[in-house]
Length: 128
Picture (cartoon, rainbow, N blue to C red):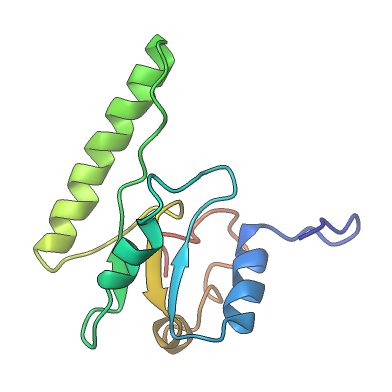
């Protein structure tokens, strides 16, 4: 979406427009600066949905580079993923990452979407 110079709309606005336009119940999300890890990414994410499972979490790895900062970022990403994925496996999901996340449209609307935190810049992937 093109940014309006007068009204500032963040990522949540773009996601909300996409959700409203979506024709199907199961939705998957990826950040604009990311790309799928394989040509099977969408198929694998879609397999995670079923009648009872309304949220699908994926790992959002960073591309490997030979710098100290990149190693630090990848370590931090991995440790955060261990926490949110293991918690989800125990039935206590508390977050995902917007670069690899799926949920049902009905779940979004039942929880009133981003309405309680629309004014906060972040939170499109962990405050739902």
